[in-house]
Length: 343
Image (cartoon, rainbow, N blue to C red):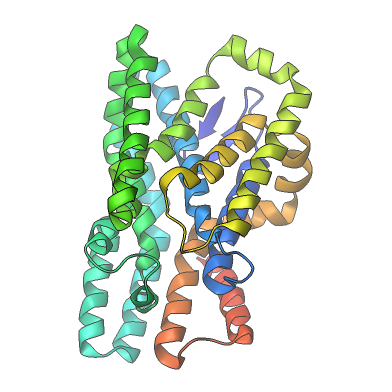
């Protein structure tokens, strides 16, 4: 399995694009937007971020593993690709948020926004918000860039992951053991931390790293030619994996709410669900007929700027006019899609 590092699109040995990955991205971003804009319909839509983590870990680890297998780790190239992928849309949203804050925010709030813009640009937003109110607190609605916490976690992971993956790769016989130690260590720390400090467990990069590593494990497993050949013959099992994975995510979106102890054990539902859908492959029935539909793929392709735009629009709307009505929320969703497509 290979990945086009420029677009982030997944290619099989036949160099065929996997539209179902973009369809899964669409599910993730729509879940997050549903939670923010229409919480009555998607109580647990915040798990969309966890789905993003698994997808990202799978895609980026595939790129890195390709380079390692070829004996030419190119970290400078990897980071330059990350900059070109992340920064253009992010800079536009940060500048737009600054301009909106200049017009509508009071001096104290505008100063705080400036701090959050700096944190978002430096990918340390999660560390800033860690020291402030929790993600689900009422004060969070007054922070137009709160959602950038997830970018912070992701980029902090990728600051370390190439080097860690190189060490794991060179260990040869101990690869699985070292990976398992890091993976389960991060997961165990998350379970312990969430019991006495849910905010720390939510924002801490170390507590979240295992979610991205779950995608990395899929990328590594896909490199085993014999295992991959066997897996391709398990048609029914792959269909079931896709269905079970989708069911787990649906349960999380419908049944979870902001009162849940999260991440904790519950985060296993979206993480395992996303992993099962990716592992099922593009020929699984749901992947082929649902996640690969043109509309889903299109939303997936704009999912990153769509994620960036929707929360500032909602947050500024609340700051200016109070809690927005349903028609305003629908208008915010539509505006987010238009801006994302343009961005």
